[in-house]
Image (cartoon, rainbow, N blue to C red; front, side, top):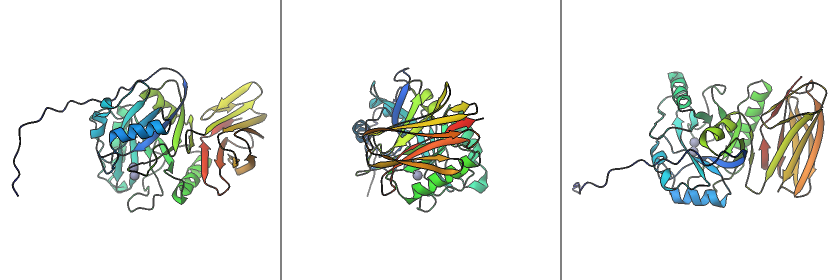
Amino acid sequence: MTLTFGAPGPAFTPEPAPTMVNDTPGWYRGDLHLHTVHSDGSYTPEEIVAGADAAGLDYFVSTEHNTPTANSIWGRHARPDLLIVGGEEATTRGGHYNAVGLDPGHWIDWRYRPEDNKLPRFLNEIHGDRGIAVLNHPFCPFKGCDWRFPYEVMDGIEVWNGPWDPSDEAAVAKWDELLRAETFLPAVGASDAHRSPNVIGLPQTVVRAQGLNQGKIIKGVAGGHSYIVESSGQTLQLTAQSGSKRAGIGGRLVGGGSVVVRLRVQGAPGTVAALHTGDGLTAVEPIETNDATVTWTTTAAATRFVRAEVRSPDSTMVGLTNPIFLVP
Ligand SMILES: [Zn+2]
Ligand SMILES: [Zn+2]
């Protein structure tokens, strides 16, 4: 077989997606972990955008394995109502992590293991782009996927990867163990979709941000101002109130006395809501209607945080919030 060069094609012109959609504060739905034909996925960029629309997403993060090439083409697919954030999934020999918010053309090396002590250098590079590093699927059963680096150096943890399974259960248990030991890693969920029939936006991270733009979405995720649900059909609201003071997900409620924790669950009838505290599971309440609110009462002396889970009767996760911190 003989290979010959043809005529030179047109030069490649990078077209990264705009980093700003709007400056309107709100809750924004997104998928933080997606693959296309730029790495080992079969989805085309067009199919990812179509899937994001079908899932009701406001933003997504492009996370190809070990290459930033896709980050230079998303401008061709950007729209005025959809934020596309550049990223990369570094598949190191000690587990996988997502760089979220990479500058176009910035490549993050993946060729190291924990004992090489190279991770801090690449975390610094990501932070230099004002990005964050989120450790992925820490208990993924495939060889080389399980997390062997320290947890506390990361900016977040993917506790729910694709359809709910035992590895997600293990990730939530580890996250909760860290939280009770006073190491808070903001939890995210993402589809890790590669090809049909992987569902883009299952699950999705709904983040409170001061605008739909790259910096503000990253700030919301890094602050833990988010919850995870299986689809755009579900909305969660968790608040803690003591007297006239009130805090939301990822916030701090300062002051002693009685604290009323209120969870509103929309779009999940027939499920069970559970309040988790520093002492473990505190209470469960059935969610019987399409728009239900349950309340619990606790104190800052009794627990340093509260967080909520909503599960179907067979224990499959439907929604999970980051904590609200209670400070005496
Ligand atoms: Zn991975
Ligand atoms: Zn992945």
